[in-house]
Length: 381
Image (cartoon, rainbow, N blue to C red; front, side):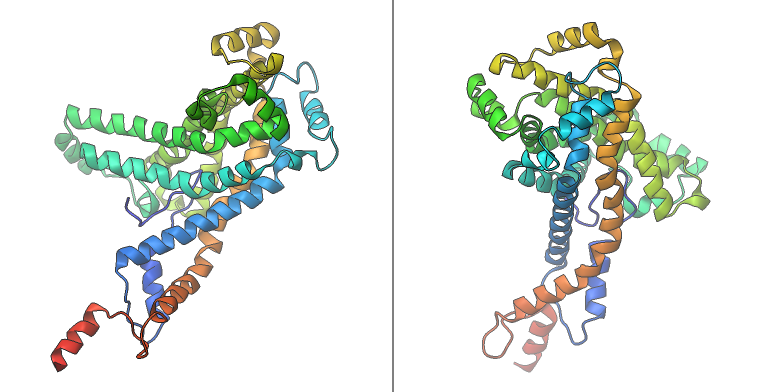
């Protein structure tokens, strides 16, 4: 997986490349000679950013648990009729002011960390792996978004090179990459989301009655609707946002700020579709919980939901608003954190790594030699 960029949700602003960061470390460290390859330094920076984003995601999601619970109740069958938002707030704080936080278990903390540290990288991995396997171009990302779209003459030249086979392979890759990435995200996150929905003890009771196999237990109930929601949002963040911004956004207005707000707007639009799957997920879990625990039949869930509430079972403005309320704080501030806060520590991280590597040297204080140092030593022998 090429480490030069690490995507972040919602079409985040373009990122400084690890190679630039490494160069900055070199420039601020006089008399320093790198004893690591560029690939190792790039990997260290990617790991640092991944851990940073994962930690940020855990903190923000935990703080925002009341908003998440309100959104979960809004998209379940437990609220109906008028004033659904008010009903959701009452259910959220039924057990007291701290009730939303009591449903957070270790699985949720791990899932949040994995979701935010790995998922963006997963899409880039699948996109580049499939692009290489099929011999097609990867999705626009990073600095490419700030460049002008192809000129008409360039489009004509490209069209001549891209036959029908190329277009089919490129379309296949563009469809498959977010499906794989979104499905992987649900493997990591769905079980913990279900646990937060039911609460730790109730979920354990339901699971014991279902008696599923280990794979099904690992994925959790209502995995399919959860995965569909994540696939929709992955397409919004990593396919639609970069492609439309690159090709159609006014070139003179392109900058980090406009990309941030454009990504947020696309996120809101994506949520208008994803909310239908979020509602299906909540109603499927309510169906699953009946009689102490039963297998989900999606056709039955949809039939009963439409019979009871009509299309309002899956989409209303309050449902969409609650989803945005839950999603916006972390998704909106994540690009700012990634591009403005994390880079502040990258120089210190690389300096610490170089210091730690040198400290492993023998009494001469130099346990490793760079290629330049080995050449110098040879010249004296």
